[in-house]
Length: 292
Image 1 (cartoon, one colour):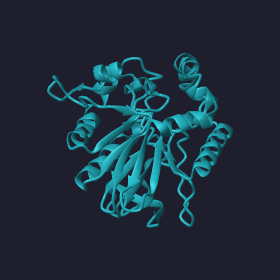
Image 2 (cartoon, helix red, strand yellow; image 1 turned 180 degrees about the vertical axis):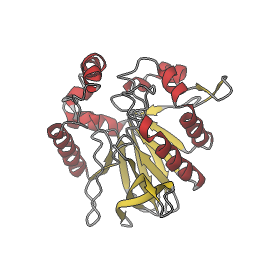
Image 3 (cartoon, one colour; image 1 turned 45 degrees about the vertical axis):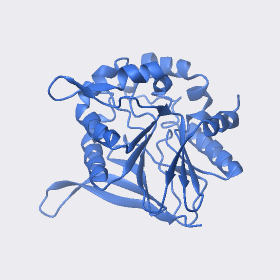
Image 4 (spheres, helix red, strand yellow; image 1 turned 30 degrees about the horizontal axis):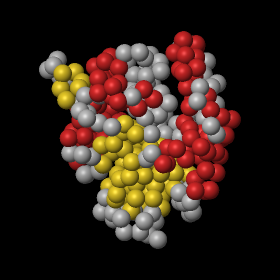
């Protein structure tokens, strides 16, 4: 099956979520929540993420996670991830209870597509009292979601983007084996994973070009993650956009959809003249408005 066929299948099976001019979405990807070990790339940005998501919750945004939310290639035990980042799952549960949370799986958490896995691992989490509290009971994890504007008919195709990466889609079990038993130990020695689209620029460019070509051929706006490289062109909206990731060295990035406009934003630590540290939102690109 070609990458085009894989993306066609994802589009055919995608869940449609309507939106309108007053809808507010935050599209975020590649958190790679881990176990708190030295290879937990999310750990250094967990406070940034919590501050950003708390702000989005308070402002009435709906959160859509575009895959690789949890690092289930490097880690076998999901329970340990939930224990380590229980405050994050507490916040995501608040979104879910208000029907403001959707989950898309990526290659690093592909096992979430299995309904039995989701029922067993996503229904509860260990809350601060030490008891099991409801997390996402009854959740459906999707390969893709289509956001469709009820007024203009504009559609955004949301997926992780690994479908354009042969190793991380068709041969994902081989890739998982290499990551879990070869590249994770070597990463601790400073050797990057050459099979990763996020760390190998040649693979990154190849995957992004395939996604862009497919989106253009299908007349869709495609928003993905996977490569960790944020992308949104202010002057002319391309068919392909990317949310970036939550594991950048000093920030997290995401895309906001408000007033039918896309804005690529960054959340990072800054200092005030009084030398206080604070979390600040800044615009990297946009807003790009789609009113046609």
